[in-house]
Image (tube, helix red, strand yellow):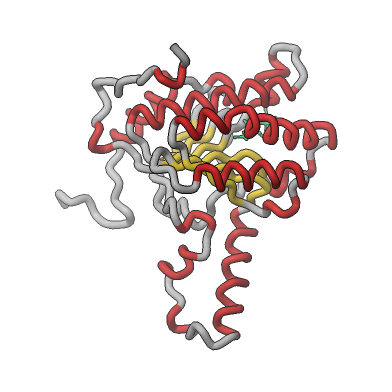
Length: 252
Ligand code: FPP
């Protein structure tokens, strides 16, 4: 039986009613994972893809509606040219290889970020995948590629400024809700839980606006080793927290 058809039941110690609707991940530590094993860094990225695929499946099986992954930041262009080229080729190969299965599983895939600066062939695969899955009603899978939170906010400001300049929008009509509609995440909304692997206590320019009230979980585990047990732990930790959104506890 192909792995995609196996449904993983929700672990009994997790409350199905209090799962995050949207999980975001900063997949850090691929390079270190490979280096620790005396392997080239790119093998860490390859392993990282498998980890992401598996996580997507567990999210779907456990009833989580949206997963957003930070695949390539606007700052990642500063890496050695061979690594950048490998990553671009890897994204393209993954899309080609996995599209049929994502279609079969009703995944809705979206890429967000400044996509126009990506290699033309990768842009083509991205458009093909987004078009082919746009009407799906399964898990929403968003891949942030050439993404930067500040860049996203500036882009939203520009779009709004154009509308104001044309007279279509009054400055007074700009509020948080309108602003959020100009962000890439207009459809998926804010993440409830942000997971970062490999121990760094940073948000690294990811979803800056959207994580205002997101619960953050950081684990020392390197991304290629972030399996279902670790995800389970992150969800248990999330369910132990009381989200207050700046208000007092309901009991106080
Ligand atoms: C960070 O590890 C990881 C990345 C920059 C790339 C992650 C991308 C994937 C796993 C592929 C996703 C692809 C698709 C198309 C869905 P790092 O290199 O920063 O590790 P280090 O901190 O140990 O150096």
